[in-house]
Image 1 (cartoon, protein in one colour):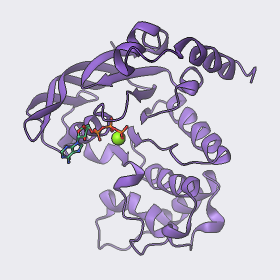
Image 2 (tube, rainbow, N blue to C red; image 1 turned 60 degrees about the vertical axis):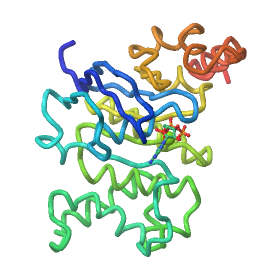
Image 3 (cartoon, rainbow, N blue to C red; image 1 turned 90 degrees about the vertical axis):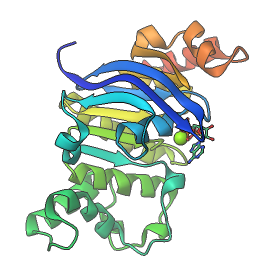
Image 4 (tube, rainbow, N blue to C red; image 1 turned 30 degrees about the horizontal axis):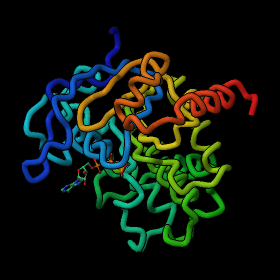
Length: 256
Ligand SMILES: Nc1ncnc2c1ncn2[C@@H]1O[C@H](COP(=O)(O)OP(=O)(O)OP(=O)(O)O)[C@@H](O)[C@H]1O
Ligand SMILES: [Mg+2]
């Protein structure tokens, strides 16, 4: 693989001595929109947190674009799962977005004029400019995710991790978010996105990482989005696979 955005070897994570990720090995090429799939409790959020050094694995090594995390930290953006965010934290949308510049500017430095301009542009792109002075707890689920995406955009990263950015999101927000993420991947960024709606897999992703404590599969979607692998991840009672594939293909080809 030529440009490897992410290389993971022998990654194992325990919570209270119980393994939640077991000996994960994978490579993901740069410039892909990557879906991280797997049932509830599969370890998807844990996987991202372990990659980003937010929890300490039992073992494993991780490289981003052939570099260690500490060498490339400022070039990695992370939008955590909604449940992990303190929505009552008193902060407006524009303040939240400007936090995307803290890694470059430092927490207590004055923002530069160009930062404010970039924040306005990012908010415009996600369709949130008119909400910039709102408190974040006054936004709808879709608006909250769009504000967080704008913050990630301000980081101008090479690799983005988004943990369920489409959960609790309205149709318009979903379209806006996916359009932006696809453009980012096309312009050479790598986007990792935890995702639940299997009906959109064909339409949304280039590459899939399929987890259930172990790595069930990682590769181009055509190789991974298959009955045997999906059942291995989601269980034998995942009987609706054929229907899911049909809906997914129809959506991808614009039939529905
Ligand atoms: N801080 C923690 N302490 C102990 N166990 C945890 C902790 N966080 C997660 N777990 C457990 O680890 C496992 C993996 O959790 P994780 O949140 O990574 O799953 P997930 O795939 O993101 O699930 P979901 O789809 O529900 O978001 C689950 O069994 C969960 O209960
Ligand atoms: Mg999760």
